[in-house]
Image 1 (tube, one colour):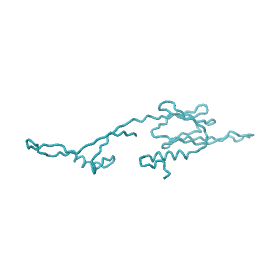
Image 2: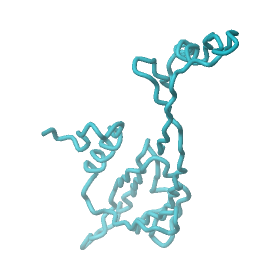
Image 3: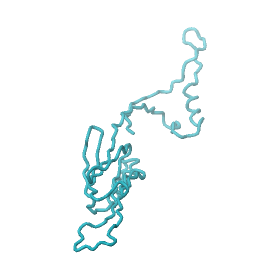
Image 4: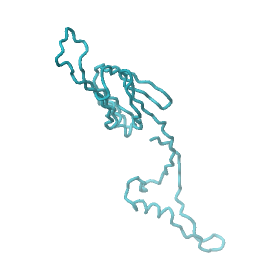
Length: 189
């Protein structure tokens, strides 16, 4: 058995999901800074990080591919000061969140030591597309295939056959008798 999560041949095109899960598992397990993730509406999420002691200039939020990265860097202003006990250290952090495709990063604001970041998760629209099933050996209509590659198939289907009429003996043009079977398949993006 392989170590791949989506090793089944029934999972087609899930390589990027497997990579995102690997990336998420490699993120730091350090609990600093603590954070909440809350659902604020049917499509809205909010990430709140406790960043007491950080000013807006000390914080940076970036979206790198499908990863939301929050970095904080405080300047050490202890020059000339003598501490008898130092429990509050100037600390740096980096917190990363893996975002699903389609998640939009909205606004961010700092309020009383809490950094809030709003995200929108739009509902995917359901698309239905008909997929034609052709006879064995017929070329497939593959998206991205060079134009004209499917013309031979289309020409065979559109070609008319000349047949004599049983009663009058006249030549009558009838469409070719290529059976067409169509089924509906739901496709989600």
